[in-house]
Structure formats: C-alpha cells, structure tokens
Length: 353
Image (tube, rainbow, N blue to C red; front, side, top):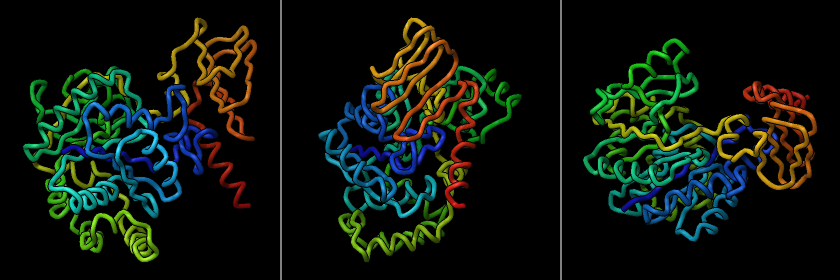
C-alpha cells in the first residue's frame, strides 16, 4: 500500500510577490498547467496511491483540501501549528498512518518541485517502493548536470551501488566541482521512501526526545490525530512549540544504517527563485516567457512575466523578470533573483515600524 505524503507548508518568499505567506508558491499556477501542488499530485496518480496525505500549515488547510478535491483522489490534510522542519512533518504523518493502516509505504516529497520527465520519475518511485520493502530508507538522487552549491549531496558507495556512504551539506564551489567530477555524488532531491514501521523505529532509536514529544498523538485514533478540535489543536500547539527544528536528513538519514539512493535523470528542479521558474515554461522565439496570455513582448528578449490577471507589456528590454500580484510588483534582473529575500526582509521591517 502506497501513501504519498506531500510537504506543502513553506511560504516560498524568494518567489515574492506571487508567493507570500497568505498564498505560497505551491498554490499558484506558475507553469500555466496547474498549481505546483496539483502537478505534484498528478505525477503520483500512476502509482495508484491509497490516498494522498498533505502536511501543511493551518492557514493553508483549506487550500490543500481544495487541491485534494480537484484531484479526485482520496486524501487527508494534517495541519501543523507552526513549521518545525521535515523531521517533525515525517514523524507527525508516520504516526497518523500507523494508526490508520498496517505498515504502509510512505513516499515523502515536497509540493513545489519541477519534474520534466514524469514517466522516468514514476519508474524511480516504483523502484524506491521495492527497496523500501527491504526495510531500507530510500532517497531519490539526481544525477548532477553541473557543480551546484545550493543543494545537499549524497555519496553512493560506488557507481554500481544503491548503498549510501554519506549525506553531505551544501558545499562550496571547489568541493562541488570535486563531487561533480567524481560521478559518485548525487543531488539530494528531498524525495524519500520508507515503510512506516521502519521510520518510526528510527525515530525511537535516533530521536527519542522528538518521538516522546509526539507520544500523546500515538494514543489517539487516526481520526482524532487529523482533527482540529480545540482540545487536540491545543495539544498540537504545545508539542510543536516545544520541539526542535531539525531536518530529516540531519536527524535520521545521516546516521541510519540501511540507507539507499536511487540515482536518476528526470529533469528535476527545485523552484526556489524566479530564474528557476524559467525552466518550466517554454520560451518564444526571442526567449521570452510568461505563465499566461496577458503578457506582451515588443523588441524584448530573455525576459519573463508572471501575473495572475493584469496585462503587462515589456518594450525594448532584456534579461529581466516582472512579477505582479495584487498591488505588488517586482522588477528584477535575472542575475539577481536570489536577492528577492532582501526585498521581503525590508517589507517585514517596514511593517513593524
């Protein structure tokens, strides 16, 4: 039995103003083909999942339920009182699933990634389910196409082995070049597969304090765990206010004994900046891109427009991105897309004055 668990709680501030705390990027149609969360769910349908589980913030609960209804799949939303990284999200969902099913296979994945080759991705997930049946913790690795400093890496024991030697943090450029040349390192996609009993045992052994913090939920039925009654919600708020914020990579995978990586080339992208969004949209003859038909390009090249409804025209410009959402407009050089965080920080500081 396969249960995909989609982590959809991030605010995605590097994609401001379209992505914001009220409606983050996973709920926007950036590609013109559906929201990022919708595209994530659609990629999972070939696996015939028993249901879809979405872990998200309380404020995005209704948006997530709408996405499940639109998918025509059975699904549940688990709301978090506050984000506490992936270890908490994994444990929270694993406890819920352990009360509802008999040791199902969980596929953990983010809601906001881009996959250009969904058929290849499906094959990799099916292989990961097979390996997880051997009580392994399985990660989908991405065969790197260049030395990237913004991703974590996974080192396999050899080019012919699925066994993991180690997980490594984001490297500097010199280290990334060494990893790239070796052929033994893969980008960590953040997509994981394991059986519920296996991952719960890892939490008991490696993160006993976190496991103990969630102990009150273990005593509940799955219906009660998923509910937001005042009593249950107050308990969840207490749990999440007291636990540490630790990634599953650092908390479990770095020290687990039976770890495996399945490398693949499936057109993966971590949509963390406006420049990266270009990869999911087909350009016109002048290398311009837009997520809808409201944009006009005149004597312009290598430029992008992202808007919900407004008509936006670019004339005589190149290498810029324009984003409109409500009363907010962003105009940036494509070479400065990572600096959007600075804009968000300035806005937050002004709001507190």
